[in-house]
Image (tube, rainbow, N blue to C red; front, side, top):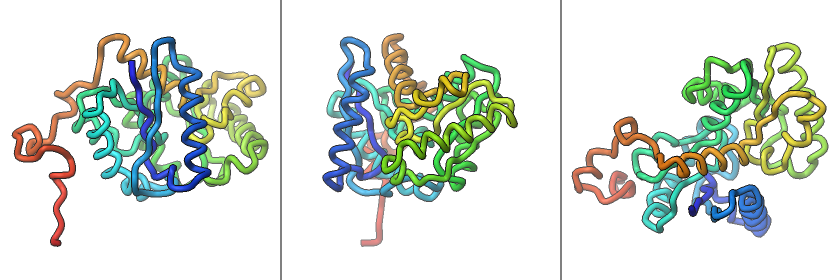
Length: 255
């Protein structure tokens, strides 16, 4: 199977970003099952990082258009590359191939391995949006809390040890104060830095890495011959009727 990880931002706009795209592709390929090919791409315009609901919304139009192109290019499934799953429903309306969001995948997996889970994310500004994502995931009734380490996304890689220390602190509070028995890092950058793996032994509970769980979730869907229901995610009427050929045709301007 051929899977593509779609970053919801223009990560490759700088040489450092291009290098990070390559590193993430190698990470995903390393954890993929035998016979799975994984590649990575980004979008041409959008937020540099996502730390608010507004930035989530900014990322959606270009991500949807790119997903439409990826299906036409023959990819078997799409990994949506932002933990908040921005535009997940919209992507599923536009394409028929399965699209998996890390937020939903980890919420469902955490619900399977424990009774109450907490999400440890980057900044206070995404606590509310992630609570909403979890409520809409199908595993929202088991959410104990969302806590933040208050390190911006683009700062995480500069001091991984600081990020680990802050995650350990918030993770311990989630277990002791919120009665969580399972943890998730609610940020793809934290996942690709393997922060859950660095913290799990000390915290003593399952700690889900969204990059790995999302990948395995999509492999399981495809391996089971499944995709999202098009009765749940109906194709936009103008596209279904042939009036529009794709998402770009649904956008108008005065110019």
